[in-house]
Amino acid sequence: MSVRAFEPQFMPIGVLTAALQELTPRDVRDPDPDRAIEDWLEFAQELGADEIQLAAALHPDESDVPAEAMLDPVANTLDLRAPFDPKRADRVLASVQATGVGIADLGYFDNMLHQDAAIRKTKHDFMIRVFDAAALLGSRAVCGFVGRHQQKTVQENLSEFEEGFIPLLKEAKSRELEYRIEQCPMPGWTLDDSFHNNIGYTPGTWIALHKICEKHGVGDQLRIHYDPSHAILMGQDTRSIFQYLKDEGYGFLIAGFHVKGQVINPKGLAAWGYGGQTIDRGDYVNGTPSENPADQGNAWKKQLSICEHELPGTAKHDPLAYLQNRTVDWLDHQLAARELLDLDVLDTPLIVEHEYGAARVQDRDLLKPILQGSIAFTRHIDEAAASMFSLQNEVLAGQDIPVQGVGRRAYHT
Image 1 (cartoon, one colour):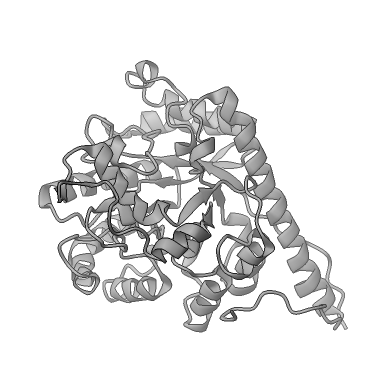
Image 2: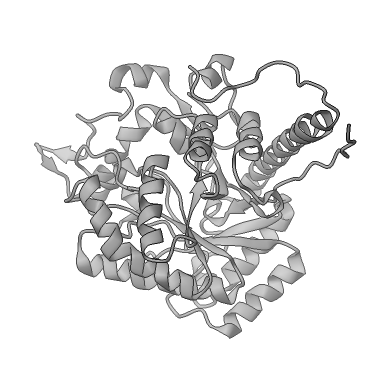
């Protein structure tokens, strides 16, 4: 019999800077772009966060997608109209040191397989600028989507990935970076009935994409930034996803997390089912696609008709919702991550992503206590899960003491 010490390991807690898009007013940040990063690092310190996920995006004057057509507007906290050079990096890193808040990674979330060649090139050129910034800031990863060529099937998009995305991963490799895919299916990216518009949406495709990457020597570059809200959107549960990855030998793929929930609306689900609203959304006018970006935003009813994003800690749940995979069981999420995945827990960030519409107030003073509460909730849930894991899997196991009960089990309904 061995005696194991009680030594829980906690994940660092961060926040995506898109939570407050214009923390620094445009008339200040446009002529002095790195001021926005400095201000966000100071704000994150006030929120009690360990790290930020630094949001990058095409400047509003350069984007091909109008803000009115987006479900969750992006933020260009990292402004790359001008290249990010060592002088800019030194300024940002000085702020990192002064605040004690780290930069977990950089996030640029866009369609990297866009069917328009010129638009795709613009996005790829911008992504390489994000890679350059990440390298200068000493970040290990950039997070984003794969996307989809909208005029081809998902199967055909595997070839698009091999031809169009592998070169990006080679650029990442040359800078010693990982590219971490978030698995949102992005149903509102198109006005047709397609739901899966980011082909990296589920473990089956993660593995298929990774096999392509291995063939081209960039397997170490492709990782997953897992967001359980998207699993709920597609009727999946976290424990089963993690178990599947372990069973298939891919427990190493997940390297970071977005902490965002999803609350399924049973009435909407009864009306439309998983896959959401496919008619009478308002994105068509007189039978043809509307040219009004605000109307085009109604394509997101494929998602909004059945669910709503959750900011962790803000929602009350019927206990049955956890068992029906209609919301995220955060405690089991954090337990399953430790039990089933190949993680360096101390270096795996939990990034709070704020997309709960009713609470997306864009006023610093109003938003501050909301984010403080959610970040604190996330930290305490992780601490509770870490304590349970250490007690059950290390302390009790070391003394051959059985764990009580069964708990949530993968693949069980």
